[in-house]
Image (cartoon, rainbow, N blue to C red; front, side, top):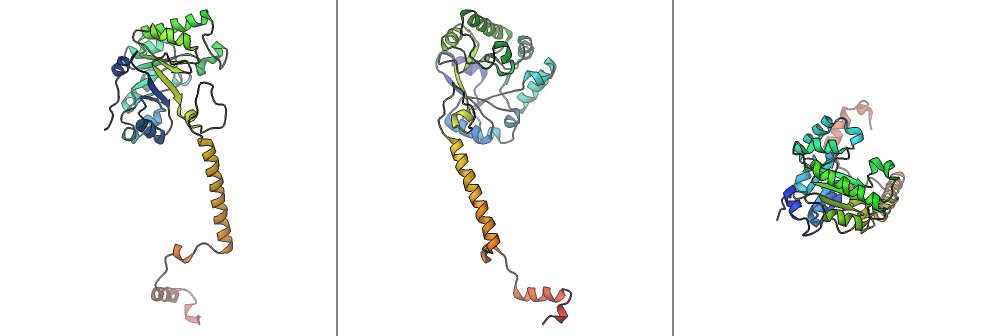
Amino acid sequence: MTRKVPTVADLRAAKGKRQLTMLRIFTLEEAAAAEQAGIDIVSAPIELVAHPQYREVAPGLFSMTGVDHREAGTRDDYMRFAGRALMAGADALYCSGSIDTVRHLADEHIPVVGHVGLVPSRNTWTGGFRAVGKTADAALVLYEECRAYEQAGAFAVEIEVVPPEVATEIARRMDRLLLWSMGSGAGCDVQYLFAMDILGDHTDHMPRHSKVYRNFAAEYARLQQERIAAFREFRKDVESGAFPEDRHLVRMDRAELATFLSYLPGAESAP
């Protein structure tokens, strides 16, 4: 049975009842797998969400997209991007910009998702790529930031690498704001991981908050060795004359060949 995309109202209705699941995806194959696995929410590049086959393979995924505020331009530029994204099929917009920008979008009924805690685009203000909210004062700042997002009209925030005790208490105190946890514990409304980490399809740093369920990197390495071996065998077959074989070719009728040869220069002197 084909699933329907949940609405923002549906997501809010699940608050306090069950945890939802969320993935960051990059390909149609990942979108199809997320759909078939029953994932609730995805974050995806606009190019993927706007792909003509996207909703064919992912009819039930609540799909968020976005643009880094450092390249988005003005608030009105952000608004234009949001409009294009929603018209292309996105269900919500991730906004790493200011609270005022969030309010600007929300005032036009754009479903907006903010970001608190370890925010990569502004990590210099929180000491780099490290946990945020480990002291009482820092935790209070997070609470106030989430409240500000809620008051500005955001319906959700990604809360990244925050102590679970802090994230849980903040989530309990948000009336309408959903907290999407990336490394912030099970007390939030959504659990969010990158598909590439779950699949283990890279060999660089694996975030502490991620869990690897498969080892695609090893499979990619094996396939690369198979690719090299196949190319090497092809080269050797060409060098030895083993390729092409007669079964790889389409032969000409002998009578047609004789006629063709008679047309060529010097045919009259051929023995």
